[in-house]
Image (cartoon, rainbow, N blue to C red; front, top):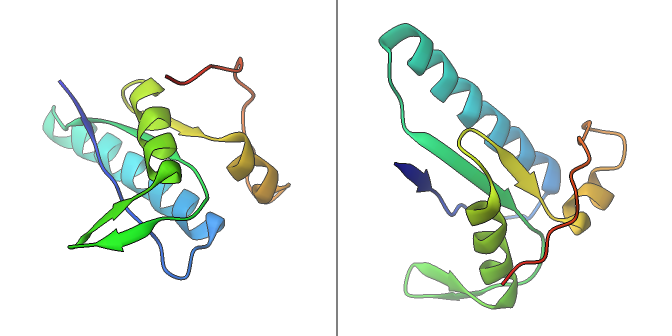
Length: 102
């Protein structure tokens, strides 16, 4: 079973979000190796605006991030083109074939 998480960052910094995603996947891998199991988490990252309401976030960019996460495989971190462009050379991003989101 795959699980997904939605985490927002204030102030919004791409590097902090990517660092968090990497740390989460590494911690899950360590737990899997040491204990034989961990949830198969897929992560999608996108940058944009969101509307905060009732302890939740809404808006087009939130939907885009969710769809990117849904396109990721177990243990994978997918980022939008906007995120990749803002990262520059700070973090190596492996290219992946462009994918149309529904």
